[in-house]
Length: 295
Image (tube, rainbow, N blue to C red):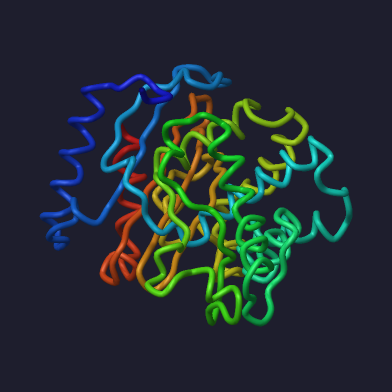
């Protein structure tokens, strides 16, 4: 059962929009996109109060940098249980991981969450112990009991050039252990952050501050990797309040966004795409946000 009320009208609207966008020079779009779309009736909703629709929303897809949202929430969960020492360097890494999508910062966060480090290949019991430790975030996600997290895999660092040594070994021969998320699982985690539903209200407030994005044109021009242009935020009207985490690489362009128009109730939209054509498509995500924002 979904964490939101399925709305058949919204489902039909979403399917119709995908048909139109596919006809507009994107053949086969429906096969390489996954979406979770949720609307709320109140300005300050509680978790589980939304109505929504999904498209391939339980399909595990490589999440690129969207996985950093999961790691940031895990940090707050670990701190809440005294599993991590509070510190300036930890806070700096989490901030850079979310605000700037730094892969280097993400590497430190994973090391701290799991008590592991990279290095040469390992063998025997040392290798087995290392692999078990690197599954700690997955164990936490499974312990939440959310059906949306049943098939996800959040155990890898994010890379520029790629992994080496034991990090490469951990991916498996065919990269079968690479990260995987669903849009439904991402949406549920995002909703939990925005509604104070998983970690403490103070921790959620800290996370929201990191996820907050400005639609100001001058600020976006000053930062070419602003996580707005080419993503959902670009399709939103001026004055909209936005919280988001984007992800992109050669075969993926994703975004997870929660926004509120002036005086309105929030909307949550998570879109994952895959394939080089979609990764290079700078207009699809803005078009989805623009059209769904009108409905």
